[in-house]
Image 1 (spheres, rainbow, N blue to C red):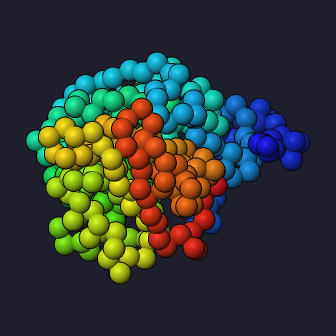
Image 2 (cartoon, rainbow, N blue to C red; image 1 turned 30 degrees about the horizontal axis):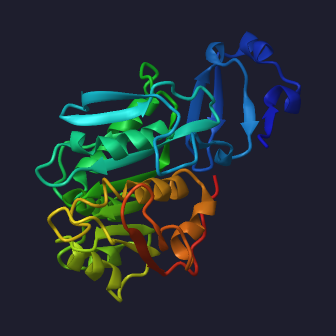
Length: 321
């Protein structure tokens, strides 16, 4: 329940009366700082109970298919060959804002090659920024969040005050997975990452964060040793999931290979982001219970099944919006 208490109710004080003698309103902060507002521009002052009144705007429930929302794709955004995909009709409810995820493509691959997962996320309420490249250092993903923050704060932008940017998810394929890993480590706004067919060569990067992450990989993909090496490193302290795609159709690699995660396995990434960024805490059981959907279940619409495992979740609690 949203609790809003008007200043007029608390103090029986009219802004119109104040304006007769003063032209600015001052707010004194705990740190000693001051914020001033022109009285002529203030219609009403309310005391609102916390930021938890703002919840993620989500549509649909099924991560295995596109959601009900029509989507719009903007190309060449933020001064480069980046893509931005989002619901065509953005939320006009100030208490329901769009969750944000950043996608990183594999090395030498254009972001448009991943429109399946990008559009699916957007059709379920997410704003998805797909970077033009993935150098593996996370810099392009952090720059994307910076750009989205500018849009969210710009009254002339269609995204003005419509984005949830306190908790951003990052995910990507191959080199894009490495970029996601680094953004998770380096940026406090990033709270979770999904590595699709990816993993660090030194197997040590996930020891540098205590935030939740998931690795999705193929049974015969070239990334398999790195994915497993990252997960099994005994220095990991953060909550992790390792999800293997098994029993896949032989496409020349002998089973699910290096391209498995972003295409046949996209449902795992969508479900993970709906959990960690969309606030759907019920999805926790899908990843960290013996009979969870992504632990021991079929890959819907594809040949094969999920084989998942998890660790370090004992003291982790879902974020509550």
